[in-house]
Amino acid sequence: MASSYSSDLKLELMVTGENAGTWGDKTNTNLNLVQQAIAGFEQITLSSGGTVALVMSDGALSNARNLVIKFATITAGSSTVCTVPDSIEKFYIFDCRLVTNPTNLTIKTASGTGFSPDAQKIYAAYTDGTNLTEISLDTLGGTIGTAQVADDAITNDKIADDAIRAAQLSNNAVITATINDDAVTQAKIADDAVGADQLINTTVSAGTYTAATITVDAQGRLTAASSGSAGTLNMRPTFMEFGPNSGTYTAQPTASTIYAYVRGGGGGGGGARQNGPTGGGKGGLGGFGFFSIPISQPYAVPYSIGAAGTGSSTIPNSAPAAPSGAATTLNTNDAVANGGAGGNTGNPGTGTPGTAPGAEKAFTDGTAAPNADLDMGYGSFPFGTRFKSTTYNPFGSGGASQTVPNFENDFMLISGHGGGPGVRGGNPSVGGPTNGNPGGSGSIVIFENIG
Image (cartoon, rainbow, N blue to C red; front, top):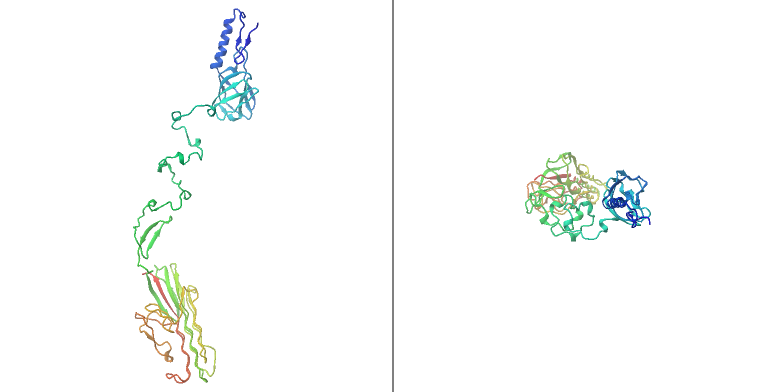
């Protein structure tokens, strides 16, 4: 009988009585084949994009018999293949560290399946005679304990974005040094989460500030505060004038707000009818308003203070109304008070009062403001800002003196009143028909926050 060969390592299996005188040589050959299978190493050059078939020959050293197969340096093209023979059962180690693009390489049995390396590393595999199977960490049994993990083994790349959750963190695990300066964003802060204890102290002393000047930085933090005079903007009068007049008003360099009390000229009084029982009409009051005006320095603007309407003359019969008073303006549009209309001539109709369009407060004449530096006047009087006497006769010889109460100071300017009417006989103090009286001219009073 002739010798046969083993199915896995292709060793020569000699029949008893055969190969007389050659057993030594054949036995040594078989031992070398076993050695190659157990400890053999061979470097194989792949064909990029092609197939390299490892072989296992009967009774002879063969590249497929080696334990370790190392692939030479190569950049693997797509569909590069290395095969081991079918029908053998064997353990292999494949060294793929010199293969660029190792995922393009497939290592398999000639007719069965295999695997593709996922990195330039060393891989273990075995063939069961049909398929080649990779031996990888995710298919091995056993447990990896703390001692098997190096201190620097688990890097950021090994941790999924959502892998570490609250349950994996101890109560004091996250410390200041592990938080980036920009890591805590607005979205990470719950409503009402930041309390007084979390705010850093500034140099501002705790306390109550009245009429305060404060400094706020770009982050909204209060960095300075000081008290002024409580309950006031520290307004001081700087300009008081009545008309008719015009010119340029220049604010003090430190002023940022002005209060302007503006009065238009009063309408003239109408003359009495010469041939009848009726007198003329009273002139309308000039418009009066308060304007709060923020200003930017330098602030030098024109002003015009309205003239009063003149009284109309006595006439035989009715005639057009007396002239109206002129408007008073500051910087054309910053503050405007229109003049009052003239009274009727030969007819008792009173002229229409002027208006103060755009005023923060448009005052209604006939209402007193007791104890005020600025007042609408008393009864039918217009406003003023102090007067040497509390009595004043706005109608000249055509009317009685009036008393303006509660003005505490020593100078008052009455302005903007309507002219008194001309009267027809029957007035004990005036005999016969009379001409209408002129109205009062307009005025401007300005306060600035410079106190």
